[in-house]
Image 1 (spheres, helix red, strand yellow):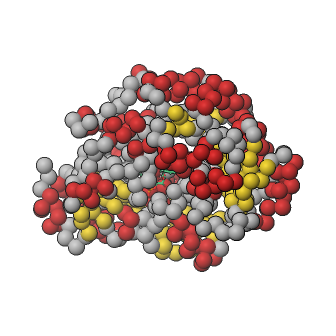
Image 2: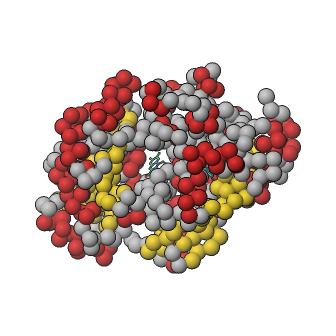
Image 3: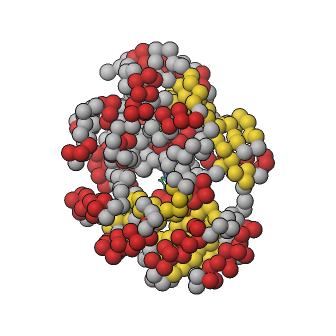
Length: 466
Ligand code: FAD
């Protein structure tokens, strides 16, 4: 057991929390979305939470942790869904929420600290010069930009801009290494892929430069259809229309919108599938003409309601907020993350709808992927058993719809199911003792792990606390 009294002395002057209840609170994220992760990770907790206010305090924390061999797991706001920010080996949770300053705003870009909440960032860049992030997760009101880069993928705005993995959607990252004398590295270009979506396993991000787009007072619109597949085809056509500026297109199958979008329920019929949209104000006339040509029923417009008080943003009905809204009312729901590779993505969705019906209510997000319009899915699943969930996953895969499994806490199993050699090589350089967020990169813990064997990886430390 590390000597935490000594560690605290060596970190004097930096904000530290050791109250077990508060430490436990900051050791969780939204892992409980998954019944499987809930069982595996429920007892995970850190020993200390350290909250640096600047990069110098990050460096001092890593220096001390390295000397004592203590694991460090970075944390933004803890809104990740796969236990990404949960300290599987205990140790220190490095809470970056106090590093929340914007340093510079320029035409087309912003330089900021990692702990700023994305809605706050957008508010400041909009007030400064009418600009906003190109895209953000639906958790923009609570999640940090650093956590998004290290743990997220894309979101509201990805219909125009693609995702974080696309070159140009992150401009520069400053990263602190976990060594006896931590180094500060500036990464640009392809090098950004070393740390983006690496769950903080190979460096702590302390400064971020992101591109910006023009900000608008986006209009929230709901379009209703009697049939989910008609809503999907409408969405696909809209996503491909050249002139209408949209930020969000998400068709969601009945009865989810009526049953779980409680604040919008007065506008939605029980049997209605709904397309959740955000449209630029100057595109509204064109959009209405388009919707009329597709017999789309406009059932809600934020620019026409008397007051939006108490009504959430449209994007808080989409992405993983759809799941959250259903889960809050019916805890038996869980979800999947599905890719429907084009050009026959609509047919693939149709096939899944035919096979699963209401056991897997549809929810798609239209996005630009590798330069093409496609849809990914976050369908809800009426969960019965782990075996049935595995079967549902297999059936998707057998029909050419890869699953990014949200019921796994490792980078590989939640992603492409193979080693990311670039991220692994970078970890060898930046974290020689393997102290950053242990248990999340299988390639580090068990280089011979055979992904093709179909077995799940269990981090050894977890077996004793499950
Ligand atoms: P955390 O959960 O705290 O951390 C995420 C990961 O980043 C962890 O591995 C953590 O260790 C690491 N990390 C945090 N800060 C740093 C740092 N400074 N340096 C290095 N590593 C760091 N995700 C999407 O991509 N798109 C969505 O639309 C979306 N919608 C969501 C909706 C709901 C309701 C929920 C619960 C989750 C959703 N997510 C989505 C997942 C998550 O909210 C986002 O990825 C979010 O941006 C994570 O930010 P955070 O500050 O909460 O990060």
